[in-house]
Length: 402
Image 1 (tube, helix red, strand yellow):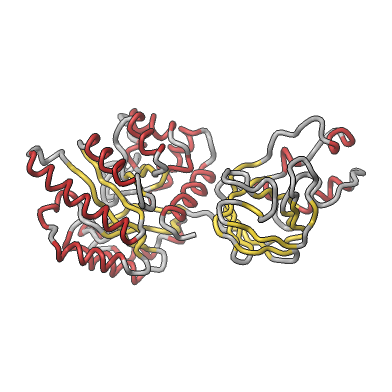
Image 2 (image 1 turned 90 degrees about the vertical axis):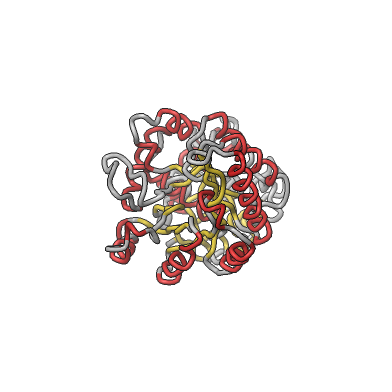
């Protein structure tokens, strides 16, 4: 736990920040009245009070704000935390987006001391939730845990040990799970788990394989479940032409897909898309809906090319990546995972299906996600801790759980 020692603002760029004692933090902007606030990833800068004191002990006469920092906090060594770490200070939530920065050799501190601590000790954050911060306020660091954004613990494969499995999750580093409805008959099964476990959330929708079962009654039932407090998405919905080659079936799936996208827009929820052998039609429908009034979405179990991934990423959507990325023959998905920004990737299992190597062929579960984390970390050249932290923040953001 840390304590805020200074809250610093500069009204004009190029001028030194001064301790204002308190400030209003604006969501996805920064400190009210600060020249460096804006729609970018470096909205609020932080420095450890201990690092500033150590620099002063070398003879530097520096005031709070001299390094360009907005917040001086004692008790937290910011530079040792991974990107994606979240900090809480009262109602305010900040997400770590960058560690260090390039120091301008001409700055007064560097000229006098021959060094500057901001490049190695300063960090930058984005404001996830706004509010007021004052000198003396406490700051806490959220412990990052794996967020499984797509699971099916309602499936019959878990009938023998479902509760024992879920009871073990949090002690094994799994912080949140979204259990996803796929068929009409499983709505109640999913929400029994949602009500039983505080860390389990629900997504409600009908898989394209069940498109012929969707009528006005089912759509009204989806709407009813969307109104429940712990519903975070409409899904899984979409198109699957793998087993269904008939044009008539394709048109039916597209109709039901659009009906459920309409519900996502109406209920202001993210959508969760299943797409198999239907790349062009899925992309065209998503583009159509993303033009107006949607609240974000996920392309679950992404399986298409880097070029199609680019289309979804450019719309601000997220790619769900699971066990397949660990397979030796998954060259295409590995290219996508390497290409996609980490802040647009989500971890998922789709359990009980598609367990990662070395458990391929077994029943999958959230407990195997560390293997997916490891592979993504290797592909992107970052630590496993950063993958967990950033993907957890991504999930909390897309599901509105910040």
